[in-house]
Length: 250
Length: 122
Image (tube, rainbow over all chains, first blue to last red; front, side, top):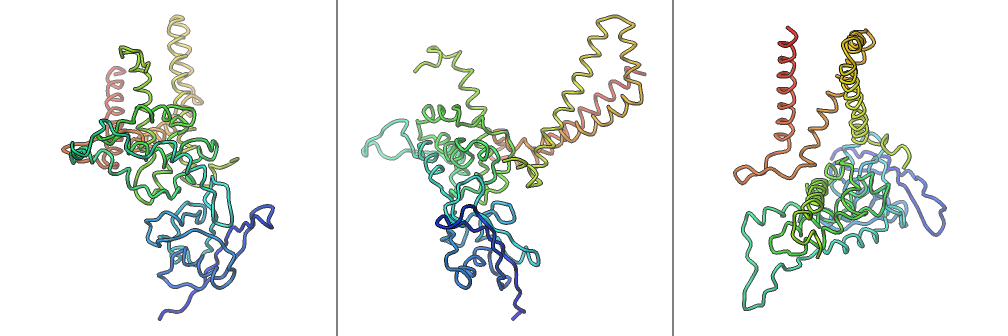
């Protein structure tokens, strides 16, 4: 057994019942080399203060619950290891650009509304009865969107996006990647409806191509690419309507 | 949100990249002024050429060169983010290949232009 080491973890606490504003508290946490930052938070909750509140579930970077700002960088705390910070202090805070509900838990209701607004389901191009059989898709058609299905809604990209910070109404990288996933699906016919949102005030033109969203994405979805491809798509829609017989009218 | 960009080196690079665009604009304006002076006759044109040869102008152009080179390098780094994926033989071209191709094209174009100007001057 190696000698037990101690790391300082500084946690941004906020208790809505008693606090006017968030404040920091420092805990001295013993750790082993296999311990994640999430386990550090769990140690604090079990041994120092049971009121410390944070979200977590799977501990294996698939549920998307445990995102937090770790030394100012949005990360999944379950796949971030304490040993990589030792002997320096680790600071953990609630994800940036979201209202704090309590301690490390943020209010995701705005994000959920954005997710709903993009109609994240297949709107069939051609309604088929059971007798007509399944919708057929080729591997090439599948490859068009598969990358954008990997999103786990961890919202690290929202915490990374300064434009979300400046305009909370911006649909944002994660929801836009999911929108793109459905628009690129050969079975889907909802593109015209979703493109209205893409080109709206809340849409892709809020993005100034900082690109940090794609950098922090734990699933390599590249949401920034989805946003930027849709700038081109929205511009195409705008200009091509002058060539269409109805002039873009529905 | 005040000072948000100072919190992360990634944001700092973004701001410097965006900031160096002003140097691109400054160089474009310098060339446009030259064009206007050319239109005003040989004397005006000669004056502009002399101004370009002053030590202050040479320092200014060296600063422009550094800033615009940085802008170009970081601009190509954004290609994989902003462009639709390029697929060759059913495989998506890797981001570093896209960035490397951009840098190579920029360097080749710059050298070709330099060679051409050199020959005209000689």
